[in-house]
Image 1: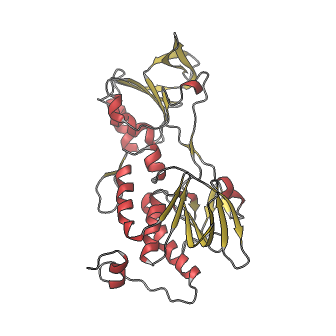
Image 2 (image 1 turned 180 degrees about the horizontal axis):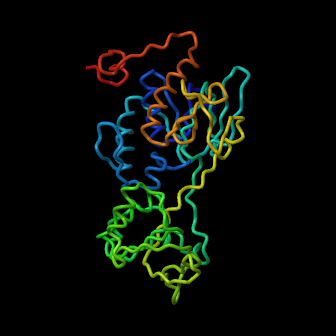
Image 3 (image 1 turned 30 degrees about the horizontal axis):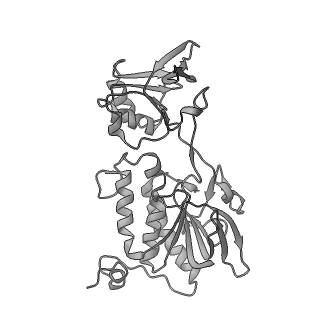
Length: 341
């Protein structure tokens, strides 16, 4: 069976979820496809407990909390989620609509498509050192799901970006010892995090180490830590109970790269009026798009989703005048939000 709809959103991260809300306010029902088996995208997959400070009117909230709040917000619009599947093909129909098919055989006949897939079918950059593969998801991890379970342990954290430093600072004082390993002395994280890290690094409970991982240490079949080569070529053995790798994501647009879109450096070019791509009817919001002045912030993605929703409405109903109504006072908005008695 082919599902006929006005819009399919590809990606169920924060921007994709807020896109559901903005479309719902315009009385447009959404189907959402995501390769993960749960909503939330990078937020829930990579850093569910990471605090976020730049969501308007919310001084601080965890990444998972943000996703939960968004799910609560879109309840009145009853979106259809198709999780654990990726869009594999897109065909242009003669009438201007699109045929989409997913990896599980779900088919859509849709008027518009909104790409909210973040970095695409992202995958954490793996540790390729000798002996690492057999310890993946046992002693070598790419996300932290249960930070409380790491209390009292000796940890190795690899990376020099925000995730690596954020988790180092979060776990300091809880873990017995943390060694942060980065290939060079300069970090890519926020200056405030770098400053705090350097003030806490005492060489005992928190140690900075610069170098490259060569191999996993094993003794009698047990995981022991990592062999690391410093910039002078000297080999060091760093003991640890667990290793966490935060080397960022390897972006992969997958089949999207074959859709005749204007792509620059694995990002999709859009206009800034309605965030439409070079193909009419296909829009893109969040980290997957690019335009002059683009800032990769969730806040920016929310703004893009609002304008994309009006672009979708205009594409679906070109003859209708687009009227801006306010959720504070509009009876129509109240009805769509389920606020009427």
